[in-house]
Amino acid sequence: MDCPHCSHTVLELSLPEPYREPTHLPTHLRDEVPNPRGATICPNCLGVTLEATTDAPPLEAPRTQTISEDFPRTEAGAVPFALALESCRSLAMNRGTIEKLLEATERAGVDPLLTLDRLLADPDIEPAVDLERRRHQLEQFLYD
Image 1 (cartoon, rainbow, N blue to C red):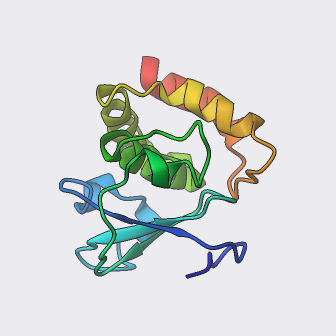
Image 2: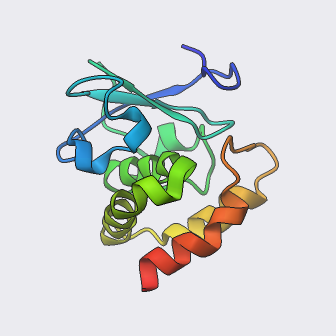
């Protein structure tokens, strides 16, 4: 399957509970697929789309390395981090969601800001969202 934003091949992942709940999804994706079971993430633009079903195994290190060696290596860190990045399309509409997702990423042992910095430095990644400009706001979400 190809990314709808940049046409690169996407990585499929399963969405564990509670990430199927609307409160953990970016507002612009909430009505896209009712009760999503899976998602895709593009290793180039980091765009996320939802799927009704998925046969994708849990996300683990070998699969996340297709995105970047710096991307979270476990499903517990990778899924909320990916959804947080997608939520950055609208900080105002998704602030509560982003806060929850970044906290879940941290609970999984991932430093979301350090990971973001490393991804932004990766020449193979061209985020669809201007994450560089949003980094300061994300820091405020974490530490306010």
